[in-house]
Image 1 (cartoon, rainbow over the protein chains, first blue to last red):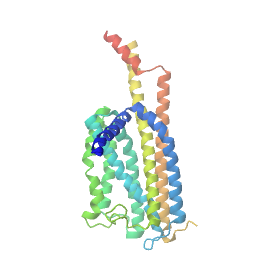
Image 2 (image 1 turned 90 degrees about the vertical axis):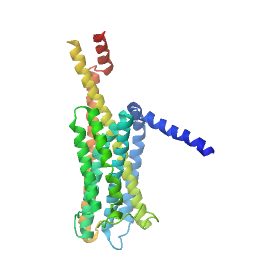
Image 3 (image 1 turned 120 degrees about the horizontal axis):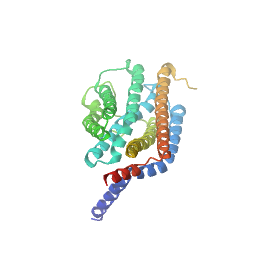
Image 4 (image 1 turned 135 degrees about the vertical axis):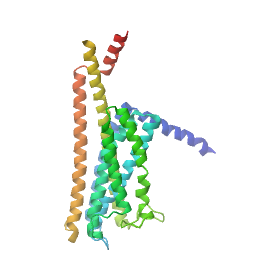
Length: 261
Length: 62
């Protein structure tokens, strides 16, 4: 009973925190406070992760030293999907609640998510050649990740296609939500279809199949990549807020100069 | 020390590409931030403000 009574207040507190943060000025203040700490944490995590990968992780009994590619390939692939999920959630915020910060979050996440998707494809290809004997196969996992990359590129192009930022924001949000159908396809492609790509080995029912010697460095590297994503996303959002202020001041300048004539 | 067997080239290429792309992204975001802050400072130095323009418009309407 006590839990039932407490949960709405906890929910409403979380909701009001997000609402308060959704104000661009408050976000600028909050992000300027948190970014130095997050940047420091990212550097420390990368230091520990790379030390474990290069000095402590043994070669895999089947893959040999090529298993080292896993520590950058898997986090890149996770963040490619996480980036798109952030974009889809922010798109709902942009379309339903018209939060000014939601479209900023979408636009800022697009090039970052596209970069991580590109890295997942390239490192996967470089891992595939020695392990599978080929750089590329048109199987469900690889093809669906390539489609994700095209979605990122398409959304970036769409956001630039309109002069009116509110129109471009709405169009991008709608297409982003349509493209979200690809995320579960990527995740479950290895279960639904016969693919060359191995099935999930970290987050799966029955626990991870990875030995702790590989799992721990992988999770540390994944955390480092995630912190880097958040740091870059916050910086890119701050840039976008500043860009919109510059644009509105330029418009104000034109209005002032025409008003003086 | 950093010899990773017959597939060393694939491993190094992967890490070099990841480093290059992420560094490129970091440099691009930092330089974009500097550019926006510079533009904002220049406009504010010229005395441009959204409030001023809005007030001017209201005066014209009155």
